[in-house]
Image (cartoon, rainbow, N blue to C red; front, side):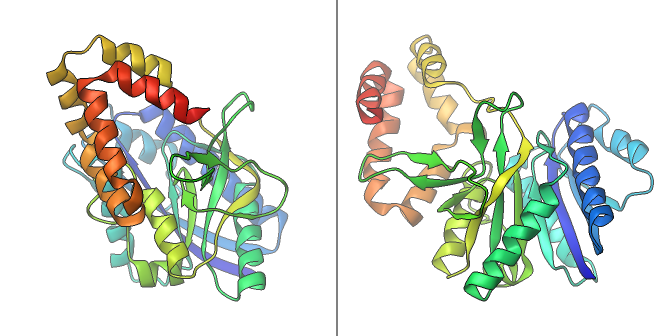
Length: 303
């Protein structure tokens, strides 16, 4: 019998219904694993309530009275990376020898086979590389037509974009990871620690995958889709039209906000893609002051 103890880390802010559904599907996937195989995989959830005013904590406690869930209160200004760090710190304070840390988003629904896929990827990494690593569950849109999150590789050269890896039935190495469903082995966390404190919202999960790979840990996506989450970010055309209608000071404020932080992306680029750093500065400057030129150049880059 295989026995694992997993700390499930999640942060939320006023998405009560989505948070409850995400946790429900996560527990269902865990139960499927334990029923299907001779496994005893235990999970304790560490949920950061980052200033929710919609009753998320009460709803979670009411819906899952028999599950092990510890709620940590945030101040409403942690955003994603800050909330995940707070949850991770709470898990580390427990007198538990964790085998894994599972990072999940509160808007992501787990497939029934998600835990099985993650652990299959773990066993593959150990058998092929002699050590455990981190494993990103591939995420699909709810209609199944698009791979939205998971792991990425760079497509090409200087102006290349990162491209999501599509499932092919077996684990595949990747360069960047999304933490919609991300299983981190304890040996990785022992060496890398928690998410980098420089990030407030975005890039922290990308950086963790790259850092793990640089340290020689195997970094993989799962062989099959593990969950569902639509990409709710604006398309380039939507962003283009929105930016054209903004005044310069509004565009400047947009990139100063934690959700679209220039500070986060520049720190990431300076640390992991130094050769692209000046181009990102130029791109952000153009996007603020000359958005039409920025999108014209960006369209050429995509070809």
